[in-house]
Each structure stands twice: as structure tokens, then as C-alpha cells.
Image (cartoon, rainbow, N blue to C red; front, side, top):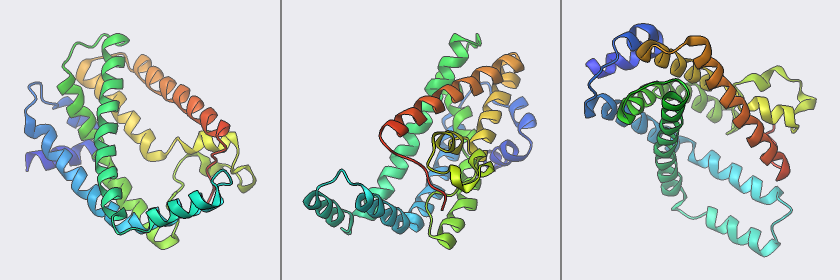
Length: 232
């Protein structure tokens, strides 16, 4: 019950949660939240798998770079019964890899630029707890995916742009600043400042500055390959 309550305090009273953040990390403190995240992700992945398949088929059909025979082969491959299992495994494996990458990035930022002296396990526990917010995100987005039939649910700064700016550089850039992602970055900043006593202004400047640089690079690469987000 203690671990479930910690998840809820991360969501609703993060300052209180970070003030009570454990100094000695036990496996249960990160394993239980991780299992809950992956279980919820597994269920929502199973539900949304048909929409993933439809989107992938549409992308293949619209891509002029594929020869007709290669396009047909890829379409047949997507139609196999194993797609659901592949999507499931990819989602869970991708989530674990992403959490590890996040931990490595924040560990690097914390130790190299903010002067934090702590273990990788402590950063990992913090990142896992903060990523329990994915449960709320999925609970909001999956019903919208089912009701609209659109896998790409817009829930970020790109919503401020008019329709005629979709499929542009600025739209691709702002699309990456999802409100749930902004929430998580704020939680990471609060966690570092409260748990490790870092300077708040410096911490948030580095976190959001690094995110902006990443988004610019990512958007530039997407533009080079002709990949543009569209409004459903």
C-alpha cells in the first residue's frame, strides 16, 4: 500500500512526495511502480494495436519511396497474426529502454552540471516514479484513440497553431511539447531541487534548454526525411 500511495502523491502532491523520497533505495520501491506501469501499458497496447496497424499500413501506402512489390510485401507482413504480439513486445521493451535513457540523461545532467552526488539507482527510482504519470496519459488518450480512430492524439503546444500550419517545421517542433511531457519535466526539476537541493532556476533552465535543443534536432531530421505530423 505504501508504494501505491507514493504514486498518488507523485501525481497530486509532488513536493510532499519528494520531501519524503527514500534515501536508501530498495528494489520494491522502483519495481512495484514499474510493474504497474508496464501492466497498464500492456492492456492499452492490446486495445490500440489495430489502430497502430491501420496507421502503419496508411504510411506505407502513402510513401512514394517504396516499389510496388516491396509495398505489397510489407502490407502482407503487417497483416499477419503475430502483429499484436510484436506491437506488445515493442511497447514494453521500448518503454524500458526509454526509462533507462531518461535515467542516463538525468544522471548525466545531475552529476556533470548540477553537482549531484547520488547513485544511478536513486535516479532510476525517481524516473520510474515520475513516469507513473504515463498511466494518466494513457487513460486520457486511449479512449480518444478509440473514439476518433486517430493514433496521433494532439495534446501539446501544437494545438495553439491553426490548421494551415500543420505539416510544417514549427508544427513538428511544437508537437513534441506534449502537456504530459511538460508535466514530467517539471516533476523531474522539482525532484532534483527538493531531493538534492539544486538551484531551481539553473535546474529548470538546463532541463528545458536540453529539451528544446533535442526537439530542434529531431524536427530538423524529420524535415530532411519528409516526415510531418498531421492533425487528425
